[in-house]
Image 1 (tube, rainbow, N blue to C red):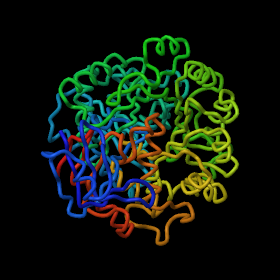
Image 2 (image 1 turned 180 degrees about the vertical axis):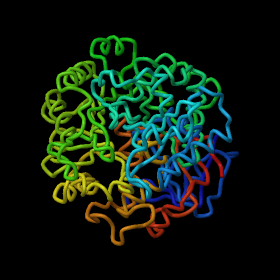
Image 3 (image 1 turned 135 degrees about the horizontal axis):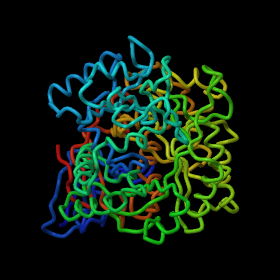
Length: 535
């Protein structure tokens, strides 16, 4: 079907706007003035008067977890809980409302002990025993790298003081020598037997829930970390079900968490390699982890934590295994993107990438996800090697209040250096790491341009020299994200020949005061020229 949007402010590229856009068969055919586009489009085209509204390319979130988002929309919601008691109360209220059978897992997500006003500590098993002693309780921290469980969950999983500490993670012991219910970097493995079993149907339902939410926020492409060795067939089947049902409301680019060197080459031969698929569903990079989170002090630093000289973070993959995974992927022409938050972790990732990138030609577009704790020489290494940075400006909302304490003032000043990355020429794309943070792209853009939290603090911004302007933020969220998934020739711009993925906004994101960006919402979201969300 032919559609023409006219009488608008359509963002084409930096400092260039048009009035009208013609879409046909899912592709943009013309962009320009009202007269030229309306004259070129066929008679009988649907003509939509934008009334002066601003139109931008659909947002492309370069790193998130769609299946987890869909799951979490159905769990105990613990984000922004202001106290430990509120976490307990929300769990009790969930059980009262939903009446799960005794023995059924009660899972929640989103607590952050740094927001607690009554006890600045992580919940332990005794706290969660107050939620229930009849249900196993499993509450994950907002970062996903720490989990608290109750006593029944420990018993059902068979975890005792005699259980060996897992490789690449740890669980805490209380003063009584027994597990206190707090797990770092290992909970999903250790509680796998008591968590619900996934099927293609449950995965499809979770992703459909998440895609509907994404479309409502103007997101038309997601680069999502959902695949692993165990679930790959169910993931394939789930996405096929969504395609069959017309339920793919965003494009899906898979980030694949395959971590077994012995089976990796075979997986690539099966087709789980960068580029397989089409523009609706495509296999993307190998996704690896080498550390944890700053909030949980599991991000790997080169030195010690400034506020805990016994802590340096956790390295979740050995250098030898990580190097081998990168080598196998690079030789197969497969991209690698690696979670690395601390400067120690980023250094290890860059060292490994530099072994396979020749002469700065990063042909497979290896990247680092998060890139939080840095100094200028480290950023220069990104420039020299052509390594991509997949970053989350929204992390500033919370991290600005802890980063100085964690790493000290000197390193704080050169971290979260989003402005420097762009000025230095690093290929930087934006994402949310949802559900670690909300999927909302307007909050993400706001934190990038204002360098303030979602309550508009501090006045003047946090290290404001690292702010970017709105056009740069939009480009990082669209054109740069398209580059990170090898689609820069057809996604991320509103130009002839590009896929017609775009969002009509209810305010002009380019001219409103920065704080008003937080209020902006889509009027209509188009995927391949088809409305997938209308307000």
